[in-house]
Amino acid sequence: MTTYSIIDVDTHVTEVPDLWSKRVPAKMRDAAPRVETDSAGRAWWWLGQHRIVSVGLTATAGTGDFKHPPKGYDDMHAGAFDPHARLKYMDDMGIWAMVLYPNVGGFGAQDFLRLGDPELMLTCVQVYNDWQTEWAAADSRRLLPITSTPFWDVPAAVREIRRCAAMGHKGILFTGDPQSFGQPILGDRHWDPLWEVAVELDLPVSFHIGSGNMESGLLRDKIKGYGRMAAFAEVSVGLFLNNGRQLCDLLMSGVLARFPKIKFVSVESGIGWVPFVLEALDYQFLGNHVADDRPEFDRLPSEYFAKNIYACYWFEQTAPRRLLDKVGVDNILFETDFPHPTSLFGDEVHARIASGLDDCDENTRHKILWGNAQKLYKVTPPDAAI
Image 1 (cartoon, rainbow, N blue to C red):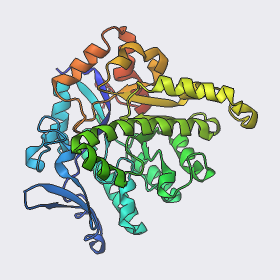
Image 2: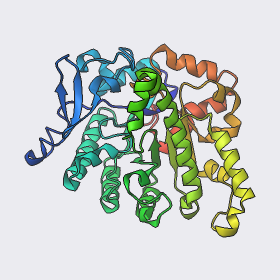
Image 3: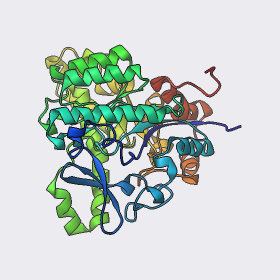
C-alpha cells in the first residue's frame, strides 16, 4: 500500500489537441485554440493567428528541458496529459493530491484576450473548465481543478465560479496584474463581486506566476543580446519578483481589510523573498502613517499576510532551512510544478524536501507538505470513506 506524505499545490495539465476544437460551436472552430505541427515535426498551440507555445514546452519533466523540449505528446511523460498516468506517477511519488493549473490560456487565462471576440473568449474559458472537470474525475479526491475566470467580465466570472464550484473545483484563478490588461486595479470596487463569491464559497484566489501581461518586445531584445537561455533564466526570476510586487499591491489595496475571511495564494513564486517584502512594507506602512489616511487598516501588512495569504515553494533550500518562522509555517505550501521545465521530478522531489526540511520538527514538516494544503483545499484524505 502506498504511503502518501505530500499534497502538491501547483501542477499543470498539458491540454489535449482537440480540447477546444471538439467542444466549441462550429462557427468558432477556426479561431479557437488548436495544435498544428511544423515542418520539423514539432507541435505548437495556436490561438487564432497567434502561435503561442510549443506543446512540449509545457511537459519536459523526465523527458527534456527548456532548451530541448519534447516535440509532441508521444515524447512526453504520459502523466502530463493522461489522468490515469498522472495518478500512477503520484502513487510512485507518495503524492496524495495535486492542484491543477492550465497552460494554453495563460496562467491567469489572460491569453484568451488575444482572441478579441467576447463570446469566443468566454466559451474557451468554459470549455477549458469543463474539460478540466472531466480530467479530474479520474479521482476527484486527488486531482483538484482550479477555475479559470473570464476576469475581463466580472458578472460572467462570478457565474463561472459558481458553476465550477458546483462541479467540485477547489479555487479561483485570477490575474494579479489586472491593470496591465486595461482593467481596474486590485483595490477597485469593480472586483468586489469576485471577492464576495470567493468568501461565500470559501475558495482561495490564486495569483499564479506569469498571470500578468507577458507581451513585451523586451524579451526579444534580451534574447538577441543575452542569448535565448540566459534571457529565459533572467525573465523567470523576474516573474517571481513580479508576484512580490502583486503581493504588495494586494496588501495595500484594502481588499483584505474589506474581506477579512478571503484567502489568496501566491503560486510558483517561491518564499525566500517574502520576509524582506513584509519587513519593508511594514516599515513603509508605519513610517508613512498609512493608517492615518486609511483607518480601515487595523493591522500591519505582515499581519494581513499571516491571516490571509499563502506562498508556495519547491526548489528553494535557503528559505526552508532559515526563514520558515519569518514567512510563517502556517502560510507555506509545497509544490512540484510538474511537468513544467522548472519542476521537481522523480527522485529530486524527496531529495529537495529532505535537504530543505531536515532541521524541521515533524509538526512543521507535516503542515508544509500536507496540513496547510488539506485545510485550504478541503482535501479528502486517503483513509476517508468514499
